[in-house]
Image (cartoon, rainbow, N blue to C red; front, side, top):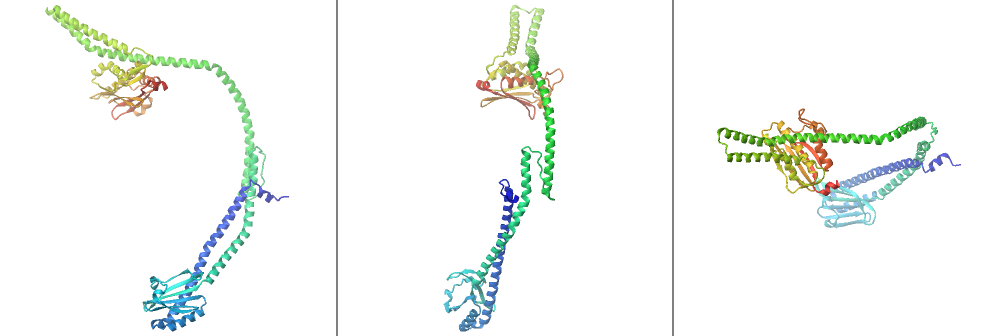
Length: 533
């Protein structure tokens, strides 16, 4: 029979064990490598310091013992003393003494020889600076080379180079590597089993809880785990059991809620069936009410436009009526004074006839302007704007309002001309009321038109009171007006927006200027654009 701990280790689902064990072993290996990387340089530096101490001691001994011989060029004594030093210290391989003047002396275990100073392998900097390092030997291997200047009474006499055998140094380094390898192997062999059982102790209860959680996820709410430990895992086991009990209780409550919900769904379904049976009639009733409201708004808009038309006719007729009154007064005056002749009577009759004809023509123009037309067609933008402006020409002159129209003559729009003229008439009427309310010394209204690709931009600007930012979002609502009671219906801008956006597929936007307000209309120019929209 397979032991429980082995079966848990071999389970594919228990990958956490291998992760914990791998992390533990990796940390241990990393610590061992880090220990080696730290201790080896320290040991190497320690051995180099030993070599440096030995080199300085030997160099000082040679210089002290051979100082007189060096100053008197007694090379025999120098050679004899250094050979004795090499025999007493087997680690020294050679000694090279190079004076600034004269011949250099090379002494080794195999003998000695005199060299020219220029032939000696010494750098100029060596006469002034002490140096030491591990160098490659010509015969193979390495040497520890120590170079020190030779000074007598502060005067540089020359330089001394001593080469030491590094076999003992290399042996110590190799031995140190072997010791670190043995320590690392022993540490791994000793601690990895501990890490193995620690990972097993940590992951086995977690694997048990994971398997129980999988059973709970599949619907087995009678699952429990029994882990008796006085740590966080024991607390986790206890919390898991409490969670499963809570889930079981919630399932029972949910079943009861589902029963209640099914009853309510049945009741709502019956109510919905009843609603569906009466929905068609309700929709028809709502559509009928909406059409009635729209017809009422249109009727009110027409009444408001008719009032504007009557006021405009009154302004247009004021001057002809005054002139006709003067003609009648002239006839009466000439009759009383006896100056009325057939010629003067005919002249004043023709003048009165012209005035009456002009007044009749004005009525025809207004009647044609307000004649309802529901057929969309292509019309000239400049003519439509000018026609609306002509209606209010008398009012503008009476109030000294300057109207500027800047519109290209070749722009064609597609829509109902009468509806668009009504839009311009509404905007001009609002602009007129705004400049009059502001008491401007030079009231001005400007219509500026410009083409923008497949669209045309129509700006109607005035230097009136402007639009308060607090009511900007309400100005298009039906029956909302800022005018005094009895002077505004509140449907002008609503109808204007409905005509522009619903009937002509454009866009209407209002904004405040530094002085006054601007209403911007964006409309498609071509018939295809309107149809596609």
